Image (cartoon, rainbow, N blue to C red):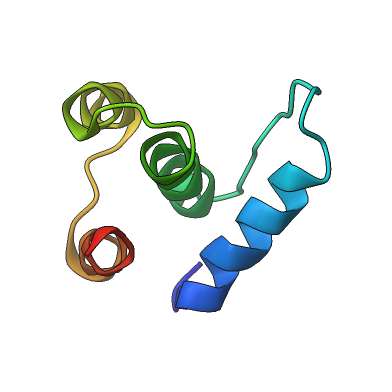
Length: 76
């Protein structure tokens, strides 16, 4: 979780696509990856507005530094 790569989110999307009708628990020991990927998936794949998804994300964690930059790079 200390060095997220663009391919990590692509792998997450692929894993989610393998289970389109399932409820999926997304978990991470440090919470960064799970929260960031769930947020990105909601915005990039499900079409949830960034504002709504960000509000939900920030109830759990406010990304900054490396993870903030990572999220921004995926959404650009």
